[in-house]
Image (cartoon, protein in one colour):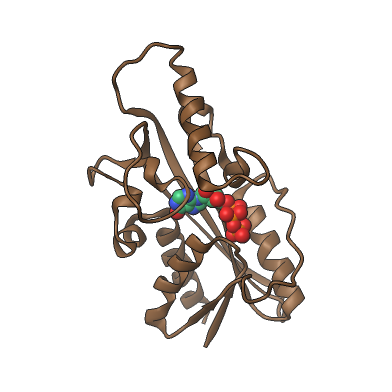
Length: 204
Ligand code: ITT
């Protein structure tokens, strides 16, 4: 069977493939449907944006669609970049640009005073998932979060996005130093997926 995920983010695609393969599901993404129009993500919350993506793509294809809206909320930045995480450093920003922007904003807060402390602020990753079925108009939604610290010393080649800067004290590692398996066990996306699966099972 096939599960369509309304994403153009290769890191997300890899994580969904890993999560759904054991269930015998093949993940398709927007790379398999390149002609679909972009969805405007102008919602105020992760959940709103996830629903917008799932509904727009679900209605275009006439098939059930899963969407993920996620991001990083940094306490020292009053929750930014939040829903703007993907375009933090500008409309065409890549992960590297966004990570540099995050570090420069946090370093700026220290106002020249270097405390020698690599952990710059508490932060959390948030993931909202929305599963929309155009045949019934029904939506299922689930959210997950994971708490950590922004480190000034990026490390690790796994994951994507802000993972090299997201330090998990309990593991003494950044999110990018975890295997796909480990990331899924603790991440915002892993938690949201488990919650969504429970909700789906309760509906059957
Ligand atoms: P789609 O909308 O096509 O799914 P996107 O990358 O634009 O792709 P979002 O709008 O949800 O996705 O933005 C999420 C951003 O937050 C993403 O670009 C990452 O930089 C960051 N992010 C989300 N989940 C992450 C994770 O697990 N690890 C690191 N960074 C993450």
